[in-house]
Image (cartoon, rainbow, N blue to C red):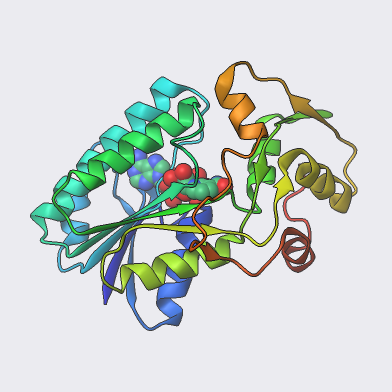
Length: 251
Ligand SMILES: NC(=O)c1ccc[n+]([C@@H]2O[C@H](COP(=O)([O-])OP(=O)(O)OC[C@H]3O[C@@H](n4cnc5c(N)ncnc54)[C@H](OP(=O)(O)O)[C@@H]3O)[C@@H](O)[C@H]2O)c1
């Protein structure tokens, strides 16, 4: 099958592309580096010609509610409209477990993205994943310098390779509306960031980031953990992932 992967150059999107190739499907990468901009719509129609399904793994790293909503609303509307014009049979969106239980600016953007897909008229699946094992590294990069600040958060972090595999399987199967995927163990994000820094032998102090409001409390007390007993479970834990990737990209 021919599957478009929007954000196919990103942390998750790359893994979807790899899994599709491994299963002898034909991925089409939609990213600015391949001449497609989901915000302006440039290149979208040409890229979606003859495509069977679309996976949306685009992202904008931000803590701003306004920026997140603007990005996911514009990208979501452009992508679903182009997918409808192209007669795509399945639209798959990568989202996050627990975003409706935790009031946080970025998650509001993700909720808008999900709503657009649900109301698009396209056959769809929303895959809600927990934070990737890579998430601690993504947050560490936001605060460079000798002291890093990490939000208090409980998460069943999951290997992004397993999320990519799940997205490739979903995109090449029948639409399922909503599916969740989570990793094998509940972890503290602060602890994961400290383990990552230690594994790198880096000289950085990792401190909890104080955040106001009910969203921060919900994050710290398990609001981002899956509640569905039937959620897909990844097999690879954080330590196994860390041993395999070898503490990538020094902070
Ligand atoms: N990180 C996590 O722990 C986690 C957990 C669960 C779910 N998710 C969700 O997974 C999705 C992907 O996250 P990620 O961390 O893999 O993202 P990422 O590494 O930041 O990659 C973002 C991708 O989006 C593309 N992109 C950004 N702006 C674009 C534009 N205007 N036009 C076309 N492409 C654009 C980028 O390509 P170019 O820059 O080349 O354009 C890149 O391929 C997000 O929606 C996120 O909410 C993430």
